[in-house]
Length: 227
View 1 (tube, one colour):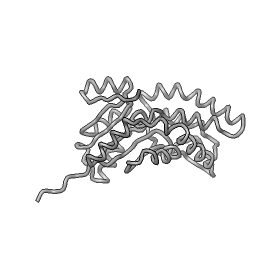
View 2 (cartoon, helix red, strand yellow):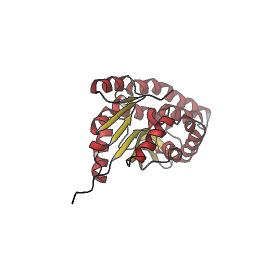
View 3 (tube, helix red, strand yellow):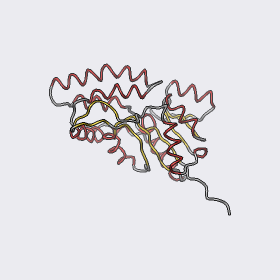
View 4 (cartoon, one colour):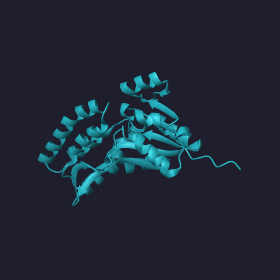
């Protein structure tokens, strides 16, 4: 008797594939709505300093980029962050959901793949976003370190960024019996190159310069719909 085929997964990078935004706008939104003029000024100053670095490091080391960016949330209460995150998703991020990405998820679901999302955002933002994306089985994202009800500005390990996504995907596949050779990955940024090499069916979506060049050299499929 033939053995049952292993399950498969479709891995989706949230930023650039499913939403037209990275982690910077959310962090700026938090900083802008901090309580107290001094706190707002400090938070916005941190974002202003981190954003250009984030854009540069986003091509190579999004882990470090995320560590620097989320320092702007230091000292904010957990309740305030959760409240602002709900507002941000409802008022801003929901409108930036990319229908092309939603359609890719729908097709992957119809093909029988498990839908797995990977994102740089913190759980306070990603969790309410998932309510609008629906068709999701699992998601890995960043988590803020909270002490005595307040954010320390640090992220809990493992920090999601890019180069580690392949290792995480292999671990995920081993735990759930996923056949990576028959699985898919849709990513938009250079640091996710290793994730693309980990699956049998990678696709570069709305890709940045680094990823586009690598996809051409590797003859991987490319798709653009972020207009």
